[in-house]
Length: 206
Image (cartoon, helix red, strand yellow):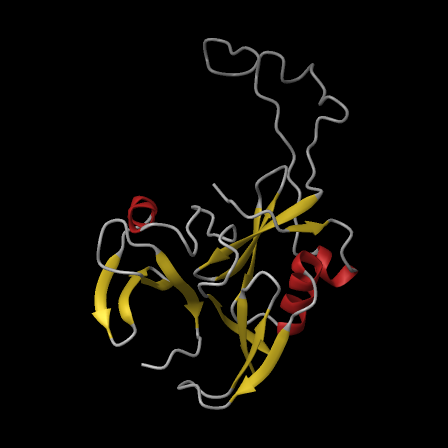
């Protein structure tokens, strides 16, 4: 379950509304005949107003980028790595406000990156105008999580209950990986907490 309470108004600029989708609830048959068909299918019209539309979206972390989750339908849309950074920045501005800091780091191992921090502590990484990664550090709002509810401050037990995890000791510390998600634990103990979480191409110095 997502803990994040960051919301996005449905009244986005035209270029961003394509990021959100709506879904209609389908009618469940009230009865079925012996052949498994719905005897009322040809006689019952959809109830006016029975469709559900999203009015807001929640922000979630993903190994593929950032996800927008519909507040009513639960439908998801991904701001995938490789997306034009202007689009991603506009969405984040609607969600959490203007960035608080942004600058270029020319010493990253993968090459120069534009690194931008947002009021909730989330850090976005860009190169050549494209969104390439995100990182959540100890000062990131703990309510910003993956769809499985894992974020900074989550315990190792919560992490391993949600994902298949590989834990290793590296120059960064107690590092873990699960699919395209990576992070650091405060220790090797079962009650250790996640201190850092990232995905995509970021600027870690090993």
